[in-house]
Image (tube, rainbow, N blue to C red; front, side, top):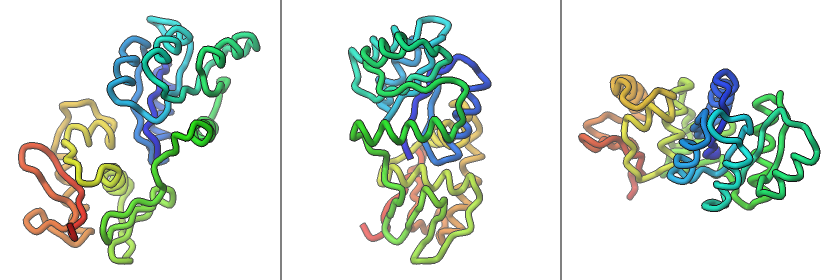
Length: 227
């Protein structure tokens, strides 16, 4: 799992990448314009940025230079431009890798893994353990006390997202945005229902929580019951 920020103006490509990378367990945010993207990248501090060059408000090469002035985040340039001199110029300007369109989600994910290995910004561990709860984000399997849980795709995504931030209270609006890819202000009921199903499979209730603790008026926290 890695935190990935996509800067891509083509709505179809952007949607496919967000969906494909999120389905592979990554936390993904995206923007179709350079200026808003710069602020979001600085605020969020992702593990890696995938940057298109043909942006409507600013050329991607200019965004790369602006980004390098304020951040060392690894950047994978993804574009249809195949001029060798351009590639050299961008790598010299601070890009960590360069991939030509069209490309598959598997291809861009492999490039991201390679960049993270080279830069030492290793992606989070593929297996997360919170007390007796074990989550294998690669095999997409979770277990409690050695008992494998029968989770739906969204139940697993919800659990895995909370497990990446153990002990931290996460708001329902953030869960809607990150797990369901819905804009802030969506229906909290979706989160409540999935939390209820997840609690049942974890062998707990809201009144007697073991792992999932509700903080009234704020959100939910995944914690080790032994602590």
